[in-house]
Amino acid sequence: MLKQIKETADYLRKYYSPNTFTGIILGTGLGGLVNEIDIRDTIAYGDIPNFPVSTVEGHEGRLIFGSIRGNEIVAMQGRFHYYEGYSMQQVTFPVRVMQALGIKNLFVSNASGGLNPDFKVGDIMVITDHINMFGDNPLIGKNINELGPRFPDMSEPYSRTLTNRAFEIAEKTGIELRKGVYVGTAGPSFETPAEYKFFRVIGGDAVGMSTVPEVIVARHAGITCFGISIITDSGVPGQIVEISHKEVQEVAAKAEPRMTKIIAELVASV
Ligand code: HPA
Image (cartoon, rainbow, N blue to C red; front, side, top):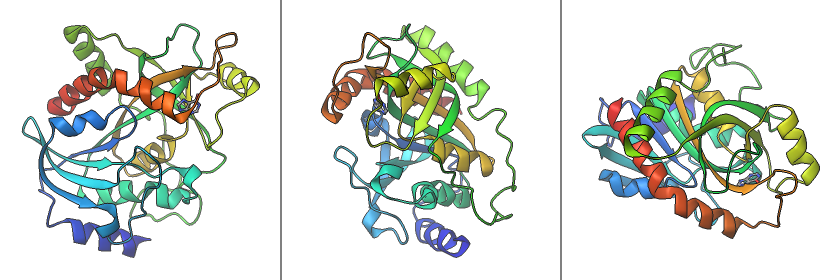
């Protein structure tokens, strides 16, 4: 794996400016952030050695190098989901490449089902913590000491500093923000009513099918993380209705401008 990471990082280094410290995974709800990027280079995943190719509708696969308000960034437009059949190592491979390039902060977004009864569909939640319900972990296997410790600390998975700053930006711009615990599950089936209830009981505020693997690897790598989620449907008993990927995307599209504003300001602040 080290050899592959090195090979891919070496290939990308010609696009990478050495003062790039911010990586962004443009998941659901952050597609619009692309318009805030002064794009220098884009590389299709298919052209990057060792990169998996994403298969889900609405997730284009390319890596973007550029800047947001003068701040250098590298952004993944499209991520790899465990439910697509990739291994945890494949899902998190781009984060390893970002680590090798020298990224210090990782911003991630996703869509999720609301578990907290105070949340409404369309709300934006800053992720303060997560619960790994994938039944797998990207760090299983022989630890590569060059990449991080065998037993990485997870006491502050999502940066408190960045979380506080996000709330300051939200207040300044009049955007309402929630905060809470994200439960990450493998998917691809949405939850049954009993599963939503279970995830609420164990301490979740929202549930989705991504982010946790990337954040585990980023923390292993010593990268500071910030996560944000759009509540696209409700898993609260009495409010559960039939949902589809299309509806998830429609709700996410509505929240996108608010989410984009917060992330763009936050990225500019690091
Ligand atoms: N469950 C899991 N993942 C999701 C959901 C959900 O209700 N909504 C959007 N992604």
